Amino acid sequence: MSRSASRLGGQALLAQLLPPGAEFGGIVTNLAREVELSGARVLTGTATDGAMIARDRPEVVILATGSRLSRPAIEAEPDAAIVHAADILAGSARTGKRVVVYDWLADWTGAGIAERLAGEGAHVRLAVNGLGAAFNIQNYIRDEYAAKLHALGVEVHPYMRLYGFDGETAYFLHTAAQTPVEMADVDTVVLVAPNEPEDALAAEVRRLGIPVHLVGDCLAPRTAEEAVYEGLKAAAGL
Image (cartoon, rainbow, N blue to C red):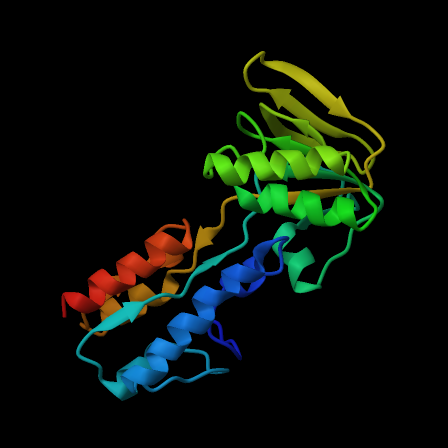
């Protein structure tokens, strides 16, 4: 069964909450307007399952059911404060004053959540499993983030892989040197990690004998560009 939502937009609605991500919400506004102009019927707040699809008898199904949060394999004490960046943006989690952001993706998410938390007064260390903060995005945006993080006093640690957190100290491996790194005096670890595809509905649709196309994160978690392109490609091929 796919989850229900009251608004179109999925994770783009969270992305626009990152500084300076307000412009990102434009993709939702623009595409929602295109859907309206097309005359397509939109149902919100409605979970979708195989029974519903069987009743509607579609000739084909395009799934864009997105992805779900996942947690890297790390050793942690049961009461250690580990939260996802997405939960902070959604307002369902908070952090302490001493934060380590573990950024597996090295894109705008880790840098953006570090900027936000530092701007709210937290002491932030950004531990990146890569060459540097926002390394995997365009250089002009990367350089802007580097300047902001420096001005806010965010400590950036590249080549970090998290393997443990005891509630006070976060334990890392330096992936180039293959030596341990400890970060002490930590209240909260914030995870920016790859999601897992939310693709269970595809199997239900296939059992009904209906052709199904997966697009976006339910195929493989990536960026909005891939999701829009794959949706367009799937629709054009019908």
